[in-house]
Length: 338
Ligand SMILES: [Zn+2]
Image 1 (tube, rainbow, N blue to C red):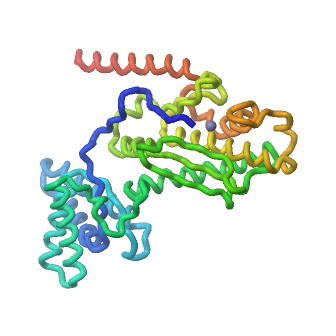
Image 2 (cartoon, rainbow, N blue to C red; image 1 turned 90 degrees about the horizontal axis):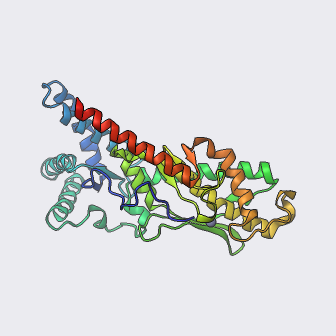
Image 3 (tube, protein in one colour; image 1 turned 90 degrees about the vertical axis):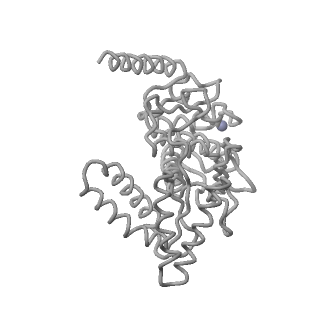
């Protein structure tokens, strides 16, 4: 799979680029949980001025709650919450109180450690995420948990869908339980590959781009109004069934990437376990992106994805894009006249 690009060739810039990724430790979560709710309520009672801030605090409370909500204890690496500098200041305020007034030494220590990290971030720009001792080294550990969880949920659901279609169409499918799967989120590793490795189905996905999309959506950037494009290889980008496609939702681009790679997994499985499959792939060239792979990918695309596309095929996408641009431009003109 080639690197996915959005409509604009310019580097991806999301609004709210000054958001901070902050691991929120357990005791700070407990403290923040009660105080943020109170503060948000309180603001709502006090005139219009406080409304934005109340909303802001409510959002922070929700984000922290949902990050910790799925855990059943305070153990483990703290979940990472993406927040505005304003919201962070609010947490710092609580951490200061904790370090001074809490009963338990562990609570006071938690507040102090948070403050240390905060000042390192504020004074020298050291990211919060690079500071924990138990910090994992993988790119996955550096992202907000909510992003990683959503992206991987989609990957696994899509694999199951692919498995079902492949059994249905080709009478057999690679053993998903034995599949070696590697997901990275490094901007330096945007590519995905798949096939077979030491006798097992194998897939390596480079998904950094989808973190950017996740974040753009979370900060309601208007990127979405231009659609999200899945780019296929030049040789079949125009193909209306397996070529490039444009979606309203970035999640569908991700599903498309998984399908492309899964088709390679089937291709290699077929090579070694031909006798288990039905005759649909018989005689096909099963190398590279030739007709064998295309037959598999086409089955997945037509059954699971193409219905959801705004349009299919590189040149159709270009036309749609021009129209979308014109439309946006006319809308601006309308507003100017008002
Ligand atoms: Zn490929």
